[in-house]
Image (cartoon, rainbow, N blue to C red; front, side):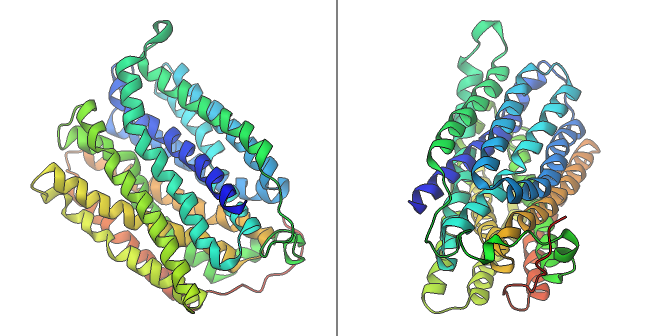
Length: 413
């Protein structure tokens, strides 16, 4: 049953990544009706990321309060309706409002996923389970180019522009998932690492108590750096193919899915490697750091993208980076379950996600400004290619040994 739960949560992650990819892949079609500069696009991305990051924290606390089943249902319904609302936009400000609402809803997704892993899986299986769940991001991102291209080229029902139907249809997928979630998910009993344990019934630790630990700050800062690069790849790869490599929608859709497919492979490999190391006798500390270090080591390859002699090389380099990123992300996302009891996992996952989203805002705004002021993608890719390595160094310094933290058991705030 727990692996069915992992697949169900993975489907939710796939929907979230499909929803957040709608704007990047439909941007050319939207620009035919609504003028959008590079800086305006960065503004739209930032609207999503600021709300996403803040709600990642708020959603974590919400999930710790409501529980996984009810909390995930609420956030899925909210973000699905927010996604559909993009289709009614008549200008940049309306798009920004919809993007803001989408971020608010999706901010609760990964804290809910992390809680589900903590409830259903023993420690040795959590990285593998998170790898399966994180692979959902690849499924959604792989589906996005082909699905959005198909809708843009073939759907114009009721006289509405095809790009509006992109948002209506993707929003509907989440509502369908919500029905299945409510029928299937329940809190397990009698399994190691579930909320049935005495440890799990403790109230969530206060934020101040959590933030006094350098280990948590270390993961937040590492996530700030690594997700800055990831959100740049996620939101700007389509535009890079359009602008720098002069692809049309059909050509970009034909190859644009490949790096996202590679990210799914990376998710599975990172989790499987960590699980295999632990099953072979490695400590949690060694297994997590070996897997994270190998993942970070491949990320500088994107620095060579501007000098790639062909599109095939561009896609290959991005594919390696996407795989390394999601392998890395799988390990970092499971760290809250290693550091704090289940009652505080959602909150810590939220803090870490907030750090990652703010990193995405900083690099996204930097990219938009540089591109609108005559710079190429080269300096942006050099910065992005170095961030995971710096993030890994930060984790090693802040967490000399990955182990449960000594937290107070007072009520959350």
